Length: 150
Image (cartoon, rainbow, N blue to C red):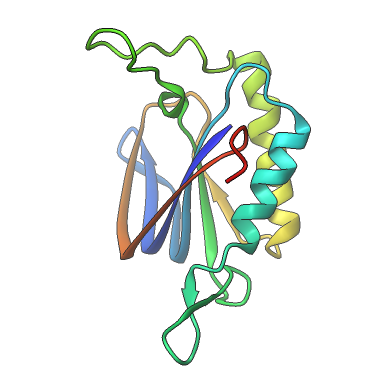
């Protein structure tokens, strides 16, 4: 499971030109689920996202997590995070989990993040063609991989 976590001053996701979800001040989390990912991967990754200290304290030091910063989370599924570019110029998405495996994990990710962040989580729509807009604050962008556990 991979996530790209961006600290944002605002972010939104639109489907067919209509805004589906919008947040101000928080984290945009792009989530890619890989074949074979388990609840254990999800629990670890969601805990890491919720507790990662990416927001500045009064001294300007990144020492507060999304809860302490009273931030929100916009969670967006993105199978292309599982792309392999090892061979040729056309990415392979063979590692991305099929919808029947990925959808329950995506929904569980939303549930876990809601539990960890006082329900300040908005989402895109799994499998939809989405337009994601954001203002990256910092910029701060972190890549997390549950298999590497870095």
